[in-house]
Image (cartoon, rainbow, N blue to C red):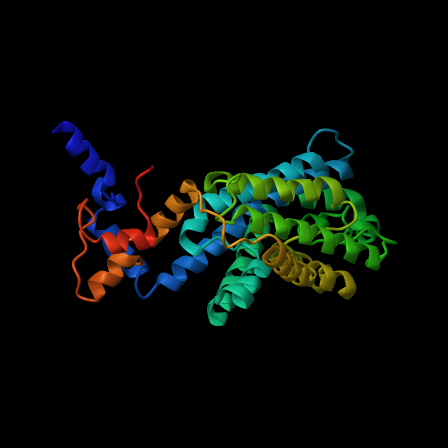
Length: 348
């Protein structure tokens, strides 16, 4: 008898609401969030994800730039910056991807439109939210560092400041991305394109449901590590890797320092746009050479899919209710066709 009850409970789909009853105010907002304001919740998650990524990385970058100006050793380093961006990516994916799908980069959203049928209007909202998240993160960092930044600017004086401000070594270079004076834009473009291609291949491999070596719980760390590797190895040449970070930071620098902070048009275009064709090419290469429809989907990926597919308001249960069918998440019998279609939560 006990074994029978245990097996029944193992097969039962348990929703968050079954374990934790929300107050009427929060429950009412949740209904609204899953209804008319669902688009807002998704955009908020995209903005928040980019905020995490930019806030972590640019905060560390601020210490690096200002420490170098002050000739203080140990405030930050390229290793720390790469690790900080990696941690920001982990936070973004772990906290926000369940709500929005976890794009956090305009080029990923564009690829979803081209190859996955993602709605173009929704993509525009996502990209705007991503840039806004980066913009807010940079302005908040400036506010936190403002006393130190303005003090250093006053110490440097207007002549010295004008010579370094809109470079990677100047205070504006904390927020906007610039290349070192004398850099070849051709070499910078190649560096950006190759790094973005590598990053996109890593992303597509990490989210491939047939990849048995990367369970969903490891995906944030794999992607974060790939970004850290790119920063550690190639940021000295000039690297953006995310148009939301570049445009958000550039707009923040222009808000703080004026139009001059936009930098040279050539590099601004490379930083903002190169990741788009690089990511599209990576998507094509991955689809042609690595996607295999005959592979078996591992259990951990099936479970990950089921958790999303069986969402109470947006999954099959909600669709069945809309069609006038009864779906009982507590039943361990019946509805076998639905269970077969979306899999089961139980581990086998």
